[in-house]
Image (tube, rainbow, N blue to C red; front, side, top):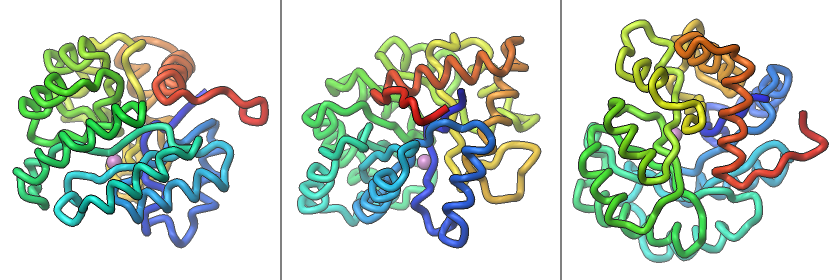
Amino acid sequence: MLIDSHAHLEMKEFNPDREEVIERARQAGVSYIVTVGTNLAQSRKALSLARQHENIYATVGVHPHDVARADSKTFDDLCEIARDPKVVAYGEIGLDFFRNISPREKQIEMFNLQMELAVQLKLPVIIHDRDAHEQTLRMVKASGVRRGVFHCFSGDYSMARQCIDLGFYISIPGVVTFDNAKTIQDVAQRVPLSSLLLETDAPYLTPAPHRGKRNEPSFIINTAKKVAQIKGLPWEEVADVTARNTMNLFGIEASSNIK
Ligand code: NI
C-alpha cells in the first residue's frame, strides 16, 4: 500500500485535469492522498475534494506565507470546518525564514496561535520549517503539541532525532531522489522506518526521473523506491510501513472499498 501523506490537489495547477491526476494515482497503487490546506479558501477546497473522494483526506490551516492576511474570523471559520470527519490534521503551519513572504514576527505569533488551536481541536499538526530549524524546534517544544509531522524535512539527522523524541514523524519528499541531496538521504538511511512518512508536496518538488514536470501523487512511488534503495529494503515494505505510519498519525481507518 502506498500513501501520499502531503499533496496540494486543491491548487490551481490541477484545475485542468484534477480528476485524471486522482485516477492516475489510484492506478499507480496510491491508496490514500492527504491534501493539505494553506489558507482558509484553499482549506475549504481541500475539504470539498475530500468529501467527493473516499480515498482523499483533507487538512486545514494557514501556511506561513499566508498568515499576514489571516484574522480572527479566518481562524473561527477554520475551526468550524476542522470538525468535519474528513479533516485529519491541522496544517500546514510553521515558519518560512527563507522567503519571508509574511513578516517573521507575524509568522511566530500565528504559529503559536495555530498550535494552540490544533491542541484544542485534538488534531495532529503538519509543520512547515524552512531555514528556521532552531526556532521551530524551540516553539514546538514550548507548545503542548506532541503529535504531528515535520513535512518536507530539511534538517539533518540530529534534528530528526529531536523531532522524533518529541513524538513527531519525519516526512521524506521527492528531494531524496536528487543526486546531490546528501543530507536528506542520510536522514532517510538513519531514521527508523517506523518514524518515516512519504510525501510528494505536489505540485511542487517533483522527484527524479520526472524533474521539470508538475509533480503529482502517482510519483510517490519514485520516492518509496529511492528510500528502499537507501535502506536496503524491498520497496513494498517501505510503502507498507510508511502507509501504516500515515494512517496511525492521521487516524485513517482502512476501508474495504480501497485497496
Ligand atoms: Ni506543502
